Image (cartoon, rainbow, N blue to C red; front, side, top):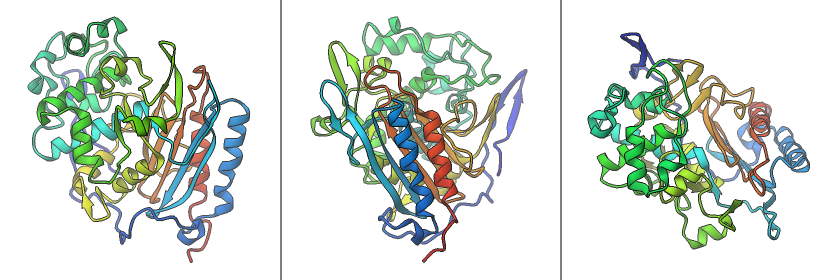
Length: 399
């Protein structure tokens, strides 16, 4: 595994991003992607995969979540896809379905925002080592002058995790002005601090360089080409009707309405939260990343860009990648048997996606653990499912 190099600047450790020309990417024949196949047909053990049923049943019985959808892909095929429990308990029960739409919460960060930023880098519109202030002059103040785009993508910019909700009470434009005026709470480059604010700024960067917001840009450049037709911000009425319910806001249940209060105050489109999707759509994204940026003959990113996204970056408390988690204090949903190349992310509403290029494996876990009272907890459960999926690899003869 190649680590992204670090460069010393003064007393601060700042990521210096390079891509080795010898970086290996998976090579395989790409069939019509993600067709359903028996696990044994691609060298997996269905008996081991079926342990997922027991893990989910235990979680449901203990009230960890009202329901969930689990999808496992291996070697470009869907080998496991099931819905469990309920997408809504109150005011009336509604069963979870395999095509339920979920509020992805912080999965927005890597899938929409970071992927959009990397697409713009690929086009030569910016560089990872660029100071953010080069492209957003209002950001270059109060000690933020040298914070780089790469530092924001890896949560090493020193920005506060979340700023006050009071900053959002006067509309999206004023909220962004206040975000850009914030001071760092740690020396940039020294400390990993998971920050929603950093990704709110990255979405503003996308808007300024692309001339369209992160919703429009990611849909046009990433989601539509990959035929992720049910992925986007602010779902239409048809998709919202299929969405898992989260919690109550202003005396109504949130369904197809972003749960995160700051994303909601920003109109539902933000860099840190607001994306909605389904398990099958996320499977298409995951497989494209395993394939080096292509799916069904359509390329959305160059192989070199995907290799850079997947390259580990040392941070003060573990390993991240550009927008993704790898092995950090936030990795409890990772599982124990993923390879060293695996990268993934979780979301506050109860979502997780882990992609393992070396094993040609990905696991999608989607739940509405915050329904109805915000007390559910699924990170360790999702991690157990990832462990089971990885344990099933190579345990059966391919037929």
